[in-house]
Image (cartoon, rainbow, N blue to C red; front, side, top):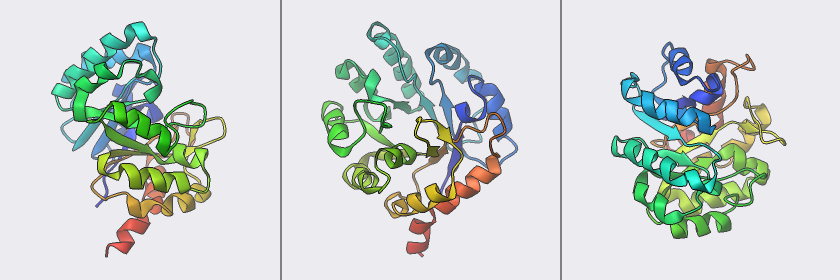
Length: 237
């Protein structure tokens, strides 16, 4: 049975405590603690040992999506301490300036495929170059990014087939033309169903639709995500 969870940033931007409170009334056993902006990262690192995360069977950290090269060493040091406590870190490849530093995270480093705004990490060939320099790193597959880059879902299928042995986490949302993570539409559900069979049921699914301003509801988005990933379940029965 699939595990579904949410990114805290989708529920309460910059307020992971508020997001965790919103999740407590739902039957959710996975969470990604989001620090997409650099000013959110240190507060999360400082607070994590005092957070009650016992109900979650899977907890990951989303590292800042941008910082300057001179800050790289400090970010990696903090993520390494979190990794030693068992928390994998989702990282955008555009902030990996010095791959040898990131190799210190070994299998707790999850590289995410990118949307069309980014110059790297969008396709199999680009991701292969990244994994070649980070041989122990794992894969966080963003299905919305993959669909935005290639609406035919061909690239999504290739990413899952080539890097499936590294797959550790999946992000799901609708990614619009402006690269914003929207609630999941019916068209997105149908597109995602075409590659659902390549996503093993034991891989946690993290929802990223922005619903912090009432755009949708937690229950609604979880149901849409379930529908989007039903093909594998049905095929395996």
